[in-house]
Length: 366
Image (cartoon, rainbow, N blue to C red; front, side, top):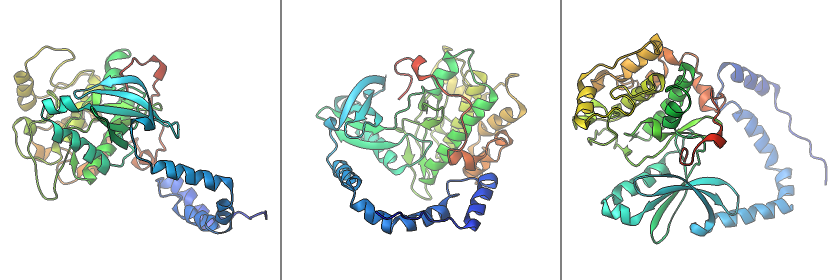
């Protein structure tokens, strides 16, 4: 076979790439380089590839990809956790060896609780969202007894475990702000699809092996039609926004309130309106949420205190993120002054903490 010369990337494109990496890094930096290489590969190299055994192997993979997905598509391993409708176990695609988490929703339990709509809603929502910061849906299938969602596997545990079980409760500010920035990006991606999440709390934020987070468990999420508002008293006690408790109409305001609760808990080591393991009635927690100001200890810097106050504003029309600026306004808060969101979204920032997966108990990740 003849020796094919690799294409030379034009110097002006190389200079632009170098400048962009320093000044404005993003996933689009190498777009022009990609175009040059693609044009080159589409000619002689592709013809040679089609004549090679690698192309035959590729066609075999594509054939496998088109086969119906069933329980036999996967090897099933240990249980990672349990939820309201069933268990979550680790699974592996037999053809590729890739690992996932399989969320099994028991049909009898769903029918008994009359939650068929909720189970199907999670599937529909996951199909619409493609985000580095939200757990992804890879496959779906059903058996006689279960509906199965095959999701991104997150082996690093949830934030609740890390807040309360490793040393004194809470995180240092750098770590809390990094997680808050990634959650903010996840909420932004959901809101681009007009999805309100409605259940933001530490146990629903999962870490991967490298220490990046994803939002999980979208059972209460809802897609809001353009120009409309919704109402619904759903969520978790202590994390629901005042407008949710009052059964008022809203769009995305409950999620910015939830981010405020999350940042507060990551810094303080307990949620803003109920201390960890405090025994208090639901009605009292709801009263605190609607009436009481949150208390700030010396753990909070001026910036973390400021963003919590702005996100935990009782009136949703005055809350940060709800005044027409959305996620862009939240990202501009001084607490994120050391976060480059363009680098974060391009997966170019290293997390401040990498979990030791071997030390996590069963059920700490999904």
